Image 1 (cartoon, one colour):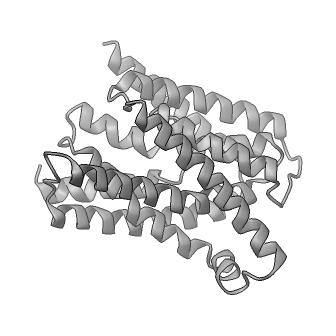
Image 2 (cartoon, rainbow, N blue to C red):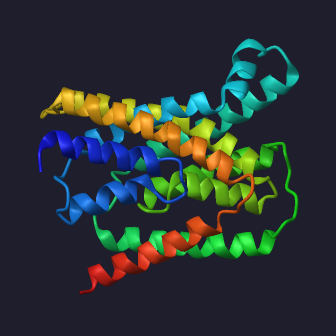
Length: 263
């Protein structure tokens, strides 16, 4: 397979899965580990997230405009403060994890288990919630919990950053639309900072960065376009549906990967 086609496919995978609660890390890692796609560096896999996270802003233009142009209003300041505190918690925790030398295991088994367990949790939690109306406003407790929740994906590949935080938000009473908006907007500084940190660390290493910048740019552009479409679809879908379908998808995919692992 050509490098260009590999970059396009990885960009599509990243764009579709970054914000859907099904784990972009898992979907990027598995085909590369199994040899279906050429293995890429950590810098490549993290850098292409940049396109996806910037694109997501265009799906929340009303909230972005509020935070930028109406920042003096109490509601805007409150929302921004909660985003910043949650980001600080995740950033501090991520630096601590990195300082301890932790690296995500690049094996299929932990991804399969995380996908399966997360899928079961989504099905169970949605069954518990039913049609019960949730909170429309993010509380401080929810914001802090989501900040810690983002760290789950930093330790367990396949857990999904968005999946973990959405589950936490739902369990704490937040409605689905509000949960998506807060966790997705929080993902913008979180993933951009993680990408910048990884690139800077690689630049300062003895090996440096040996990426093909044109391939990286192509994958990033493709991820941006597909992420925009993916999130736009999800926002419409979740108005009349729950996350149960994503739960079952995770369960089925997790079982398939477990079978592949043990055969």
